[in-house]
Length: 509
View 1 (cartoon, rainbow, N blue to C red):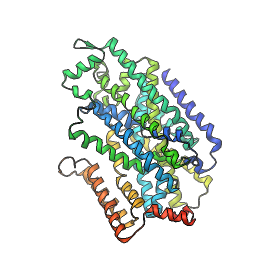
View 2: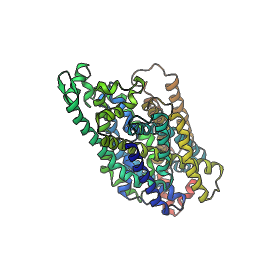
View 3: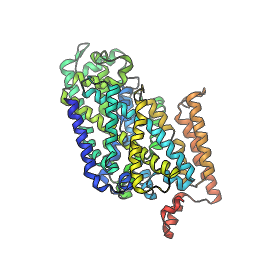
View 4: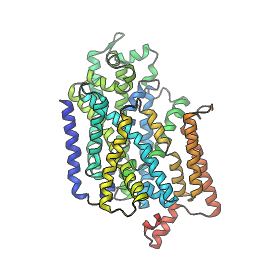
């Protein structure tokens, strides 16, 4: 019954929003960027929930039941309090200011068609890996909503696949924006209500070492010498938390989402650069608060033997919070919690499928193969590509064991692209150093992944060597050369073109 109600909720919400905006979808730009019509409240709520997904929910409870414990909340803080403001106050408005509709269109104007095709291909390939994670987390929510009767794999993931496609298929970005306004409310409200309900259950039903309720949870961790897991600050004084989690997460989010089409849909669709910035406080609060309940529920669930013993050891990371919900929460609140989870995962999966489908259709298939394709056919092709992207992600979703490694690997691929993008925007445009940076960055990435060298800590973490070589070859050297040779930055080129009255589209030729 709960599963039926939840599915009806999302089907009505998603399809209803799609039908509501469908009359406004007449061109490809209407579909892929809402013809730049989003006001700041929709920009803020849409951007706030797009990065959430399984990285802000499932992967957090996976990590919270391990040695890091509550310290993984710094993931949420790094994103909500640092990355979100950075994107909304700087890189998002900057992308909107250029006048282009996709990031590869910007890099095409900077570094040529070949690099834009490369950029689009890497984005589609790497962020499809993120979609895989979202399908898994959505499947977990479906499993829980069914009371464990419907297996996560394959049926829960198959339902997730259908919901993800429907999230953007009918009305594109405008449909997604309206759905995300509702989902932002559901996400915060449902997850915090579940934490309160879990605390009530503990007070009535859980005793450990003579203590009851939350005190029993504390006693459990104390007895196992794990009391430090209950604090977000226990690891903060050591260098490990900074160099193993906070800094890598910050680097990955800034660079990966900074040049990802899916994560920037709200900015490309905003009415103005002012609309990109105005809702920054609202978006930051939504983004950060959303991660806390999942960590708390993971820590609570791990302390309850009845929850852990009901799950096979290899599935504990995925299913510990859903299993806790089935055991500890009233069915209506379980449904509310899983709708909250679905709100997070579907917002990310839908946005990335939308972004990847747009790049696949516009920048790769049309741009490289059929440049004279009509707008009508491009709109049809974009919808087809959204389905194709989701289908490609379905197969690995049925076989992937963990979420966090996928995030780390997929985000890493965009680091060199971000550095050359920022370098060209602010310092100088150099095709030579652009390609040198990408080649060296990817060589380092693959070496550190498949034949990791014996290097001092923390350089064994793949983020650091890739970021360092990208900084040196993609930003520092081009900046020095540009300064000494008097080369122009891309911002200067755009400003001069606008001053002279030249059409912005000519920059891409």
